[in-house]
Length: 364
Image 1 (cartoon, helix red, strand yellow):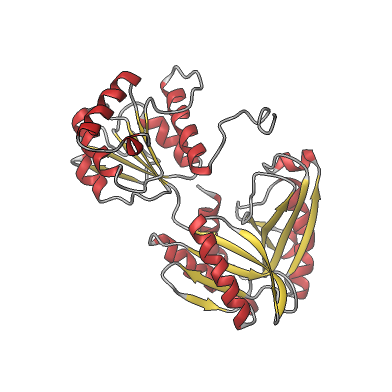
Image 2 (cartoon, rainbow, N blue to C red):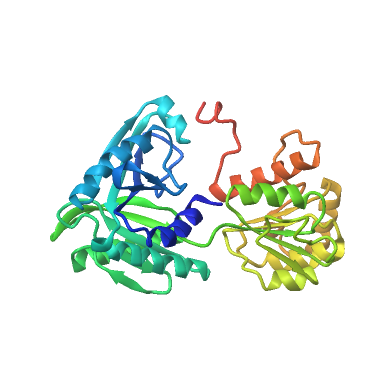
């Protein structure tokens, strides 16, 4: 399960726990990458770790130590943690740097944060996106403002001008789908605000419930994708073959795909290897903003398909969006390796990766 999906699930469970709880959130990283803003962990009274969501490595132990002070005083705290290279690698960062973690109590006296997270979760579950803004300093540290993409705004950071400036910035972050800490210098306040963005999970639509699709769904589920398997054959699209799939959709593939969300965070993968399925689906998705389009098959077959679409009047610019042969060149031979190569390309496109080995990245 994706860490943020776990967090939302545990939020419901821990709200019923009869003890004081602190929520720690990684709000800023400096001098290191990749960015992990938004990573979270729960700490109970006596330094007890709750749930399975953690920031990771040595950071967890330091957060637990500071969380005891937060729970004792019922006051939020922003802490700064310098990390060496080895410590950074422990939590998935590439090099030494500095982290800032905001620790806040979530108990009977601090119900607003819990209620706003619950509202955000409900909105995201229905396919929406939003941002929870948290003030990190001053006497108003911990103040929160919730902004949803349907225009809903709840709470306050402590002043009308700050609320408006932060809202304007949050709209941009929701569009980008990234969380960050932003400084604001206004007549009423100079402060920093953490903009925590949430939206529907990235979705993988796999057309064709064949042998490549099975390991692909397993791997995609592991890295946090929502997976939808589409096929016309009920014998193939079964829970026994795809226990990790979020949905198995049986029927005419082109009609099913037409009903699915084709957004920039969606990847469409055609592994049915059947012209009568692939062509009508490609005509549809090439007119959409879907973030990734890939088709299993040889270069020769791919060129033949693209030529047919070109004859239908689809532009060369649109056709260049179709990745065929699909996947990165990993030297793949087995079916699971082919699935890995496909997912590697999907993840790279989704995050804007360079596809270079990390040992070569940044070298002249």
